[in-house]
Amino acid sequence: MFPGIRRTLATALAATFVSLAVGAGVAAAAPADGPMFSCRSRSGDCRQPGSPPVILPEPNGAMGQEEFIAASVPGAQQSQREHGVPSSVTLAQAILESGWGKSALSTVDKNFFGMKCNGQGSYAIGCVSHNTSECTTAGQCFPTTASFRKYGSAADSFRDHGATLASLSRYAVAFQFKNDPNRFVAEMHKAGYATDPQYTVKLTGVMAKYDLYQYDLAA
Image (tube, rainbow, N blue to C red):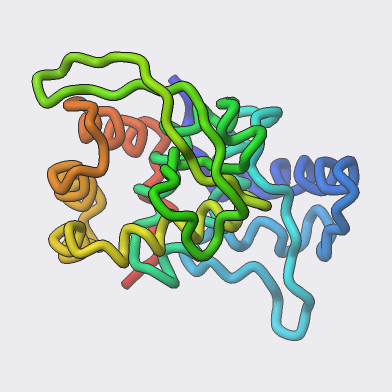
């Protein structure tokens, strides 16, 4: 069983991210024992007063599961601040839709949510075709090809995901349950987010297994 990520791991994981950031050519703005991990708390504050913002590596397919979740939290929490989607929901969708960042769609095109290209939107930089699968309402799934959005960064993928959900009227009922992530998922699924009949079960299962609720920001 994968243990829940707790703030007691902050020092060890922060040191890991310093190493990752340097290896990727990214300048970290805090020491390993400093506030780098603070953005993963419920407050979501990634900086000390008067200090510059902390730059963390973006989620990618080379990361382990703990690293992937930790790297995805800032984007999920920013989406919650801007658009109201619970961070736990966004994190679970990133995990499920991208296969922990290892799918071709996420590694090549920075698309962590399977966002389709029925219009490029404000954040995508183009559209690309990928093999995928769809399911009928009867639960029969079949392979197909679809056009998906391509992003310049994982951050833009996270922002677009939240913005799209918040802008579509069919998801309005889900946003009545911003403080109830499981109900949010059920209503989002019911409104047609995914064709997989087991999508709610799968998504809430991921949320519970990895205790992603701990990253939801207080209303």
